[in-house]
Length: 106
Image (tube, rainbow, N blue to C red; front, side):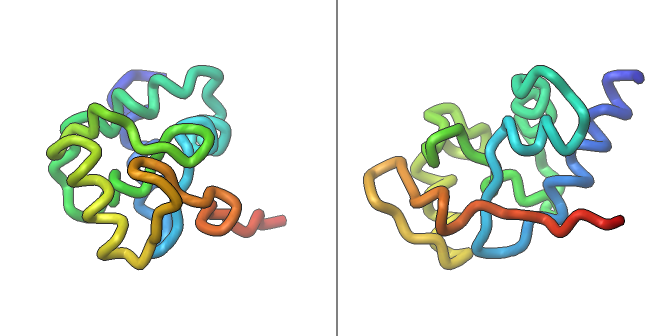
């Protein structure tokens, strides 16, 4: 699979994350059948498509990445708060509460 098509697949998955929910880089990698979650980060880096809510992709443990490419973790937090997500620490949210669990189709 070419890098471009992998990135397109990742962005399509991320586009499905509903407002008020998040997924980890690892969650998205699993959904995309990838073994390396860093590929998800590369796909999100510098995303300028407003249809791809890259703020909803976070680190494992519910942490925001310091290097969120559209303005740092503070901007990511702001965007998530606009989505209705609240925080339990400066850069941490309750992953159990906000984790997106897509329905698997049979």
